[in-house]
Amino acid sequence: MKKLVYLAALASMACANSHISPLEEAVPPPPAGSSTSALIGPEGGELTLGTMTIAFPAGALRDATMISARYEEGGPDWIRAYAPELVLEPQGLALDVPATVSLPFDGAVSDATIYAVENGTYFALETSLEEGRTSAEVRVLDRVLVGTACLDDCCGRGQSELDVLLMVDNSASMEEEQQALADQLPRLVRAIATGDLDGDGVQDSPAARSLQMGVVSSDMGVGGFEIATCGNGAGDNAELHSRGASGCMLPEGNFARFAEGEDADAFSENFACVALQGTEGCGFEQQLESIIQGISDERSTLAFERPPAGAGVNVGLVRENSVLSVIALSDEDDCSASDSDIYNEGSTRYPGSLNLRCWQYPEALHPISRYVEGLRSLRPEGRLTFSLIGGIPERASGQIPARILSSDAMVIEQDPSAPERINPVCVGDAGVAFPARRLVETALELESLRVPVSVHSICSDDYTPAIERILRNVARSLGGSCG
Image 1: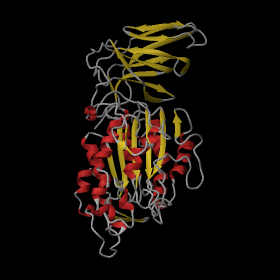
Image 2 (image 1 turned 120 degrees about the vertical axis):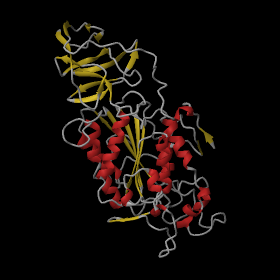
Image 3 (image 1 turned 180 degrees about the vertical axis):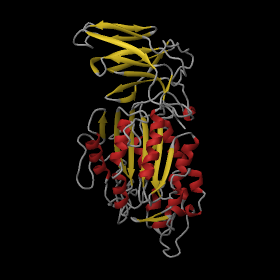
Image 4 (image 1 turned 90 degrees about the vertical axis):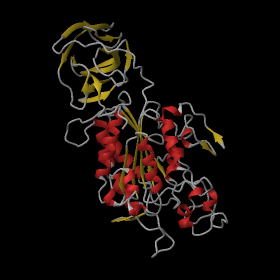
């Protein structure tokens, strides 16, 4: 077994702000109504208003330009402002080289974030703190605001990068469910790119300046054993898919990249097509192992038999400072095995029907703690969300994991009318689903570590409520909130 080196201290699994100095004292900003202006040329220069400065490097402006700055009361209501909003003019002027704005503020040092408007949208900028003032680079002259977008408890500053891993069950019963999720992806992408969660044209939360999305399947093979519906290989080996079942392909690489200003609809339609992974995958779904192997890299605390895809072919999907959102779609429970003999039809250690073994022999499966630990080792400071659209009762859709697990329908029992399977947990227009206890237990453990989670029923006719909850959780994480 190959042990990957763990670089981040596991002691920071709880929400922490160790990356941000809490010792600096904020500097009071000038009052609303204060203003100044200066002529800045191609050679560069600096604009000063009280203790606020904007430094224009050489080459930022092509021609000598009168630059003005004024403080105004206002800003969106989803930002708790730590100073009046700074308005820079000429508004909308793009700089050839970014300028550095340094803002005084009077608020919480640990989560102070600079937000700037570009093309009518507020983005969280990479913000540094020095001598009680925040600094960030701006590429366009417009509105600039320092504050926080945390709704309640904060884990730190806002983010502008979002990486999404979509785990799609590609077994034989999943065609309609895949399509139902794919139908929702354009809305998901538009909301993330604009921060307009409800589609009313008004920004509700921080937007993602940069979005990356990749898809893995639940097919991790069956350890080399011959099973008719699985073959004898390693399945998809947690590798990101660049091609959908219909033949559509991502334009470059094995994951999709979207940047501010690009066509969100074209991006989402293409990724939605690739998310349709078909129904030829193995019926032994290993959803959790596919997720963790798909994104694990040198920071992981886990042991793997071979280097995981996240440290190889999937490198680049999960960036160092991004918010990571994991979304799982499956109509069965996880069967990630620590002992592949459970897939051996002739096994003497795990006798009985193949269809029942994942339930009958839990000792052959990896513990849930493997996946909780693995995810938190990649994101120890709160920049993580986990969402499941899976086998739970429809009436429990959207409830907290503990309440879902306490439902009588989530008790796994053999189906007396079909002894080769367990009792379904719900029946939808697309078919039946089975209790996803291990997947919901993973959500429960992550929730206890203040990770935003959501759990919805795959049997629902409409996945809109699930997408709305995913968006709310993502917005909280982009804003620096952790629970």
